[in-house]
Image (tube, rainbow, N blue to C red; front, side, top):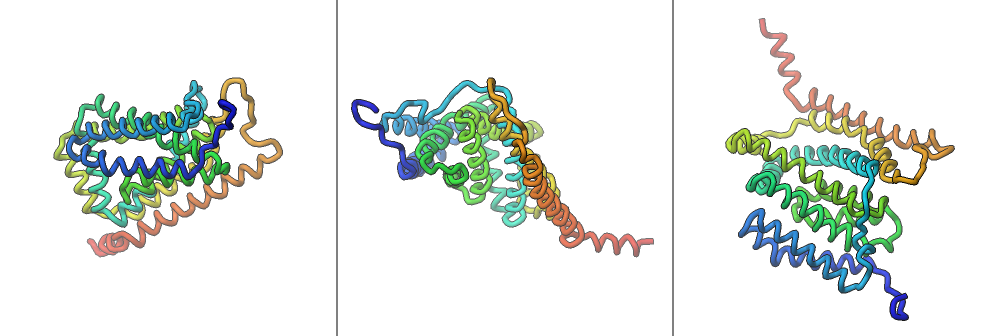
Length: 323
């Protein structure tokens, strides 16, 4: 109760309206600014969406920690966050390789333009603008304001799905939608389970830091070599066998997600069993069966890529005919 009146619960429609306001501001203000000032325009974009999130919090007059749940972090949940990020990255790599296979030139242009932005400033500046600012500003929008509005949905899977879709749409690229939606869903799951935005910010920062460092490592070898790399990606179809191998690697994802979730919930003063008592076999099978299915699909796809979608038989025939 506040001043004799019950506080109104934030509703999902408010989160959707806020998201639409953010996107309108993005296209009306941020896009021209980014076109004019490049990566520094990106920094202004992050500050603008952070300001919108703060204005929303002021307008609804709710406790700051209700909208922006920021608390002290602990070691095991951080480790769980990193494990879930690795699992999410594996899934995103499979999705990205499939997209490269289907749309090589468009994907190469999308990734190349993103890489050129990352490489346009010194590494330290890039870390601030590309890693730290999105981890604060974008998380304030998505896992702050929008998530706080979606909590009445109650069901975790539905909240994760909605936030994932909105995060994918937020990045405004059809070729980045699926990977960013997967990452957004993963971050949302972490924040819902821990009740702490900081873990989501860590995930976001690490996810942006890895490609930034990779981009600068390639730049260190020469801009021409980097340009040749992007050009070769756009002109060469990704082998089906490569997709199969990464899919087989993704067989570790079910166990990794379970392990990551377990670590998220291991905070000081809590005690929990790794397997629920009396459900050890059932839970193990829920992990083992999808892992075997994913691994089997990866092996089949790899074999198909080698024997059906390559010059394997031509090479064998030539080897037999050669003296």
